[in-house]
Amino acid sequence: MEKFVLILLPALISTSGAKKSVYAQVGEDVVLKPPVIDSSNRYVYWTFQKEDGLELAWSNHLGGKKVAEVEPWKDKLTMSGDSLFIKKVQPENFGTFFCKIQSEIHSIELIKLDVSVSPAHPLLPGESLSLSCTVDSPKKPAIHWLNPRREKKGQGTVAVRVTSQDNGMWTCVVAEEKQVEMPVKVTGLSPTPVLPHYTSTSSRFAVPCSIPPPFTWEQIKTKGVQEVHWQFFPATSSGLNSAQRLFSLSLDSLSWKEDQPRDLRPASDPKTGNLELTRKLGRVDDRGDYVCTMKFKNGLTLNRTVHVEVLQIASSPGPHLLTGQQLNLTCSVGQPLPSDLQLQWNRPKRSAQPGQNSDQHTARLTIPEVSTDDGGLWVCGLWQGEKQLTSAVITLTIDPKVSVWTLVMACSAAAVVILLLLILALVLHRRRRRKMRHLRHQLCRCKKPKPKGFYRT
Image (cartoon, rainbow, N blue to C red; front, top):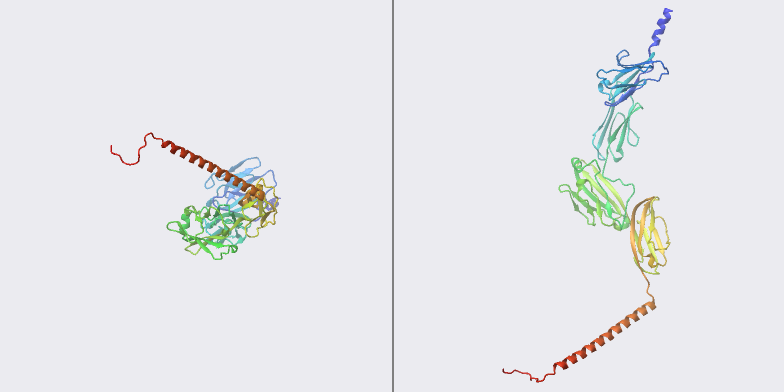
């Protein structure tokens, strides 16, 4: 019997399974979880570095529990069930932890993880980025990085030349378990338009371009900005084939120099980051590509291209018509529209003409005979679903048509009026002459008229 007991005792307390690894950064809260054991009557002990090392915490099925209050564990440890919580882990808290539950001992190694991004400040497209993800352990787990598009990039250390697509969260993956996200800010000139920039001949014309936050003009200067300018590449339909340099920014005075007059006005204060071009109204010859360019001394160049489409209404025979004339209204941007865009007319309330729509790309209305009710404001809107992108307007003036009899009657009435005026003028003239004769006759009745001449007194 004694021999049997000696054989059994080593099996009563044994280390179960392989050592588990947990990875954490300094300052992170950590939870150490032992395997789940189905036993209602049990005691749980946590020790550090050795099975019989410093006792960190214990609990039992009766509700009793206690955690160590000695340095460097003071105010850092709590227990929930069998798990040990470590608050804001510090370098001295990394190591091997042992959890004794009943007759089994489980070991968990807490390994320090170092993750860094350099430089930490925002980047411009084309600048270099370095990412590092390492563990402080002789055993090196599998490590790789995921870019914001969830594409695997390199292993523990990655060096890339960033583009705008690298903006977002980069993720370090350790042993296919631990994931640490690091934000990377890559920003160029804004905006990044998905659609062309739609405007109209009835709307304010504005080509946006700006230095987005968190960048400021002072930060751009420290990166060695060398040149800022605007260029215009006309659409082929305009008949203008050559590129035009519109404005250049003087970096000393921060004032714009106009290179090609197009009645455009640049933003007055580039220090605010606003570089847009504006005009009161758009024009058909504004169609094309506007390129905002910023060059740096290290060879880096930032471009932002804004493709502009201008919505226009054409009226045939014109905006001034007579009742009964045929009217043709055409609304388009000069080229086919994407499938998700539509043109819609909004006519004057009094107009009852149904008109005719030819297709999605060109909103064409034909009214065989216009009436005075068709006069007023006609609006052509460009819509994407429930959102109106832009609209063009035209004001039609419809005058009544004058018939031959109406013209004869008008001329007769005018002739009668003129004749009456002549008769009245003649009567007044004769009456005036009579009065003048009568006045001269009265002036000549003198008792002793004197002859003309000079007399001595």
